[in-house]
Image (cartoon, rainbow, N blue to C red; front, side, top):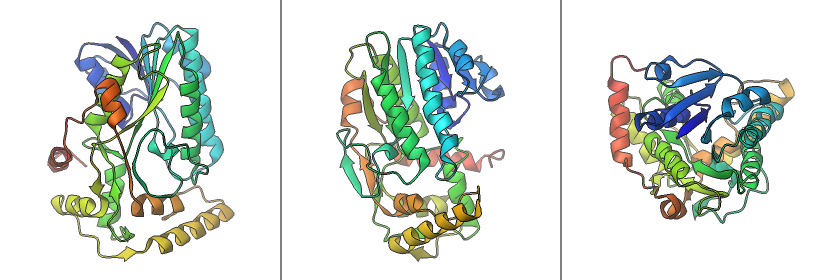
Length: 332
C-alpha cells in the first residue's frame, strides 16, 4: 500500500504511520512541520496545511489510500477556526482523493458527533447525530463525517472511525493535562463517580485504522459507514483516574462537585469568557462537565464484524505500559 497519513505528526497519526511502515507499506506523512522521529525510520514527511487545497491535492497524488487524521481539537475557540480545518480541510482531502484516483479514504471522527449531553450507554452506530452541540469541535467533526460518508462511491471508498478518549505512551494532551491539574490540586471529581466511560489505548486505535483500511473497498461491507472504536469494555472513570494517579505517585483527588454545579459554573464561565473576548479555555465548560460526569460507552460489534477489529492491548496492560513510559528518565 502507498499510504498518505494527513495529520501524521500527531499522537494517533504518528502511530498509524509507524504501524504501516513497520509492516512494509510505503508511507508519507503530511503535516504542518517536519517530524524527525518519523524521518529517522524512513517515513517521508511533506509540510503543508490541510486548509491549502493545492498542497493537499499534490500530497494525494499516486496514493492508494489516505488516512485523514488531522483536526482542530479542543472544547473552546472560534467556530471559524474549527470550520476551516475540520470541514474545509476535509473537503480538500476528499477533492484531492478524487482528483488523483485515490481508492480509499479512512477518516478519524469522534463519538462526540452523537453526544448531546445525555448518558450514552452501549449505543451502536444507529444512534443519530446530536440535535445540538456544545462545542464547535463536535459540530464541525459531525459535518466533516457526513461529507466523508457522502463521498463514498464506486471509485472512492470511504469509512469513518470514532475512537473514544485515546491514551497511552506518547500522549501529550489528555493524560498530561489530567496529571497537571491533579498535581496543582485543581482536579475535582465531577458527579457521583459511578459513570462508565469508554477509553481507547493508542495501539488499539491505530490497529482499527489499519484494519479498516485493509478491508475498505468500493461496495465493500465497511464502505460508507461509521464505526465506534474503544477497548470493548468501559471503565468506571473516577476509580480508573484515581488508580492511575496513585500508580504515578500523583496526589489524590480530595474534592468533588455535583454535575449540576459544574454544568452551571461551566455555562457561566463560557458566557463570561465570550463577553471578555478571552481566547483561553475556561477552567470548566458544559461539555467538560458532561464528559466527566455522564456515562458514555459504545458498542463495537460492527467494527469486530466488518473488519476484524479486536482490542489486542487490554486496559490493564495499557496502564502498565503508560506507567513504565512515565518512569523512564527521559519521559516528561
